Image (cartoon, rainbow, N blue to C red; front, side, top):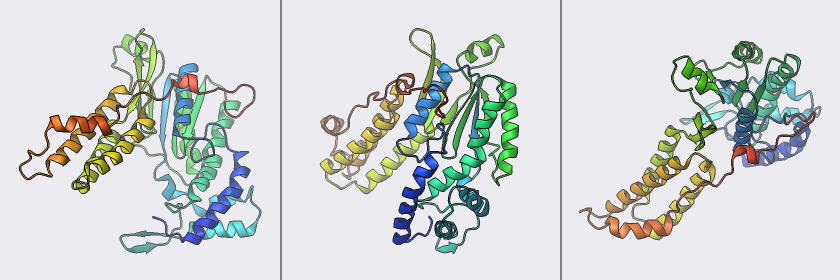
Length: 351
């Protein structure tokens, strides 16, 4: 965690408030992370709408290795100077970058990376990737047209879609070189090029290959599926590992709350389960919602039974009304992405 005083946080917030309108005129529409009036679901909708409405057959899932920890300070400050001429602001940003962090009681001074937990870090990261990646991608899309190309970026999480495999492979090679020039590297284990899109399942079946591969983005596994009418359906379901981690964290918290009043724990669990449903309640993810609720209920039941040494104080018959009173049944609360995402026309950077 970055070492930042309260006064620094207040000043950082003031600087962010001043710089945000300046860079909002520069940032592209496909950048969604830590920006006003943008969130994860808007990024997810943009990606889904791009896959569904464009001729996408290949997905490049990009992972920048240790991005927030490897941003070089001097190149970042040089890029900021393009739009910020106030030396006092530049001096403040330089000091914040070198604040350092605390780990296991030891204080470390930074020469690269942005301080974790710092108010200004997300904006600085967006500025750096805007020049390192976004401008280059936009230029490539406009000057070297070779089929449809889409991109959605949320902070350092980036997914690109291509019509042709050759264009995707060229992009990947050129992207490695581009990022290397800014002191960044792609994670070779997590950066993948996969065949994905509306007609991929049919093509793979003709070649005698298995089902299309899937990819993860912002907590969801994206899969090629079919709807009830047999048409193409972009299925998004909660990443299995993410679901298990959330259930595990609830179980750990329940152990600490074991002897709290049932009503108090029930109210807390209600907000936790509702929060999960509000984020992951997208079309096609109903089974994951049901599974999460079931596992949370089981964890609570197990916790309540442990309050008695004999394990007989709480029965499922007594427990069922408690569950009905506090644990909501999760439902799909988000509309289909093609209905929610408005694709702008003309020369807008939202394209």
